Image (cartoon, rainbow, N blue to C red; front, top):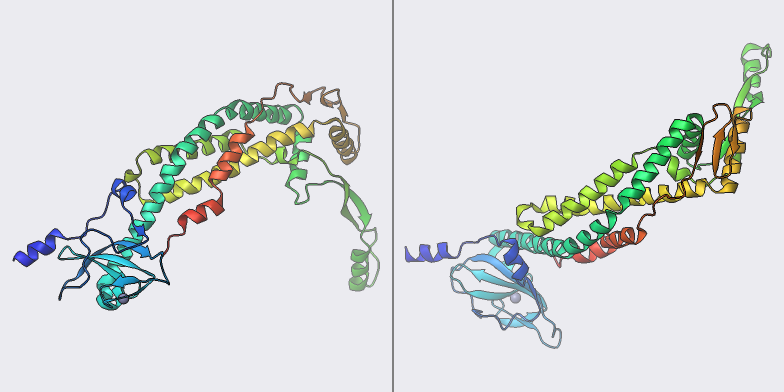
Length: 352
Ligand SMILES: [Zn+2]
């Protein structure tokens, strides 16, 4: 009976996030821990792994192992037994000694270690993301103005807008003209099949590259406001979670963290679009676009104005407002740094 109570007192309890923050799960020298025993009492089972070590004096000196009863390891564990004793065990010795129950404690310890890294990652990210978040809130003016400008473009010059969207969707994003040319191969096939030439020539339409242009990114259709809203929400979620990690499953924390990468991607697209629309309105670029559109339509429908483009048939025009608010690109690059996969990889490299 007494023995059972003793055992019950040493049942495994999952540490809270705050406890994990304090726990030293990875140590160097395992020899000087309180409650450390050099031998394993007969019949004692393992309750949990307290920490893993990598002995820094190896190979000149080696770490002691209660199973081997000798100094022979570089890597290993401190294990807690069901009688309350702590014992050092070499990396393979715990599993040799305890088999299945070692598998369980190792799995639980692995979970603790992973959770600890995740919690510390959120401790690190929380304040930084909060700062970036407040810098990025100034983007709302730029995003709104960009959205309004593209909205006006679509409203006042709808045909040109659609032509440019189509060009922007091409893999090469080039401005091309379509030309009708005789399809001699098709005519030959007709002749072979029917034994006589077609009564009228067969034509096909062939693309001819006309020019490259600046600004295609702005004509890839998506809602900048929605993208911005999602990015900002994702960052806010990270900040909120970092204030009380205990409320979140590890899986959710990982998803929230991945949300930073998505936010960077969305904000990067917005920034590209914001820059692209300004380049689009450059004098040379506008001239090229207008010339292309007129040739594609086969009539002089568009003309460049001092700052914009005019539809000569409807009298509507669009130009770049001179007060388009800037986006704080510094905030974006600090966020990009925070989400950098290389840095995140370093953090996640648990020694298991
Ligand atoms: Zn050993």
